[in-house]
Length: 586
Image: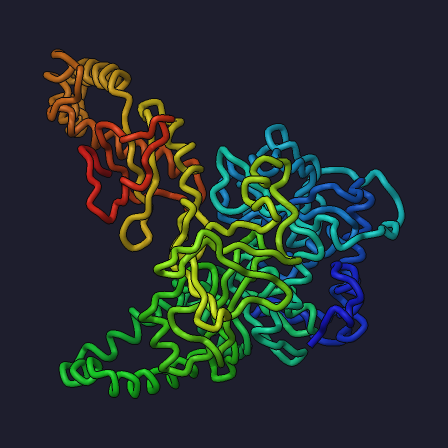
């Protein structure tokens, strides 16, 4: 296990030098279907790419974006950027073109590495400000000119230099770049070994985006640090791509999000024990349920080819029933908790010490405590200090100041409590508005609301979590604009009536005909059908302008929001799970 004593400094150049010195001839990275390259070969490619960036005019402090799917070249591109002293700006592959444009402009990144499959979604240079594009699959220069010559000069890099600016999910309309230093990220890679040691013989299978700091630090840097081998899927992780990969490379370590194991449990495990009445009856008895889970666990381990020793689950909370199954099945799962702002790991538990319903102890070297504690429940807001806490939000000192206490503790916005010994952390909820997507992505409702409010008929909006991790938009329409639009459409429908007007427009015309001729002080029931049409249009409008994970599943129309004296919506009143309904749905 490598430590700071081996590296000498919490920087990427120090990590690279140590790994090549100790594990240069070990296999480093490769696709499942292809060959691997060694750490020495990785270092040589990093050096060549770093020289090219130098010749392109990249200098210390410049921002260079990576908009690419995961693969062997992703990490190589990252190391070439940060060992030059420049700053890497990872962008999620799911980001919409508008979001990519926003992040590129906000970060000031003029150079971007992009996957071939994402090239068409890259914004035009005129709008994004990029002038140099490199294809990450081949490292070929797509646009731009090498103006310099020779090799990159040696650059002095300190632990406190910024290594990454990471934009979390859902950044349309509002940019929030988390600034992480060399020390933040390398410190987490070293500290993560407290929960699971990795050695040069381990083999990992990467199935999550490397642009997510969870996968990058725990799923990549920990492997790099210890000379272990990491393999990548060439296609999205599905049953047809994942199972053959597991059989071929027989990984010992994997990282995942809860939804994958939840799907296995609900689609494979539960039906096995509930399809036959006799087995179903036994399954309802705790003693026999544990025995059946143990049997299922053996089968599950075979699915992962029997060598799995660490199946890390992070990004969002695990379903308690599914976690209980994994524990009783003796499946080697582990849990972790953290935020992008904390690089990300704060607490966790390795396979031997997991306890369903809890997270585990904090990572060594950081401080965790609760503030504003409820004396009856012991629940309070979790705050943290440590070398993994971000430098701040890029170009936003006001927002940065808002998330730190006066004495320097970072406010996570999460509610939690500790066990009687004050060691094991349990999370009880979120004090912020952030919604966790089904795959653990951070979804910020305010960002989706920003897009909703751009629709010409929307007066105000709110995005809440619905059942089964769905996203529901509650909107208040501008009634005057709605009436005018209804009138225009009705008139157009009347004009087209004798020219093959379709049934859809005819129904809408009938619905609004009488309503627009009368008083419009309040929307009548005759406009309900039109509201449904508008709700569908709003849903389409939003989903065209946000990334996949931020797409809304349903729109509900209400007459009026209840607001505070300062005209803020009383968000707590609008919990869709408590039967908030409106007059229009999509």
